[in-house]
Image 1 (cartoon, rainbow, N blue to C red):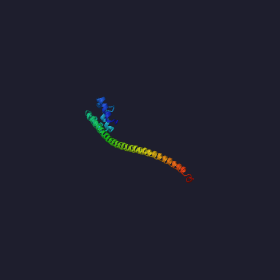
Image 2: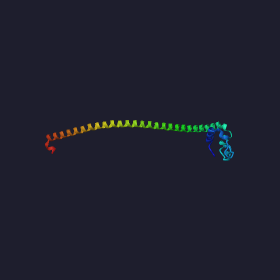
Image 3: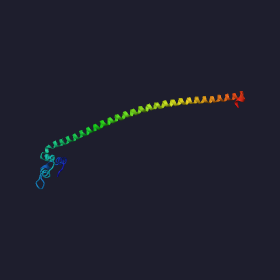
Image 4: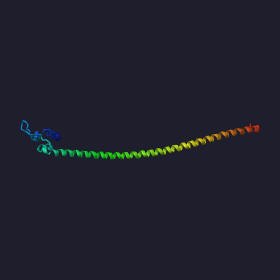
Length: 150
């Protein structure tokens, strides 16, 4: 007995003469609505069913307001996500820049390591040459003065 307005309007649209009909007790749909304390919206419609277009308009207006609110919420989320996306892009650019700097440092250290390795090879060769010279000198000293070498 407390049908929502959209159900009442659907019944009216399907069977407009139903509003004039009476039940076994002689009650019209309006009488029944009053007896069961139907919503003001249903009462208004039953009193003036020709005004149902206004009811439909009111429902559409509510739906539009709801959609506008949803759209507003979506725009806020969109803006928020755009801000987060911008921040993430900045972080990524910073990380890429830092990675490029670190790559340059690694390349520079590799060059320095290579240079040091070459210097070590040269020093090692020099050491070997000095050892060889030292051995020759000891040999010559021993050959020149066998008494001093003992």
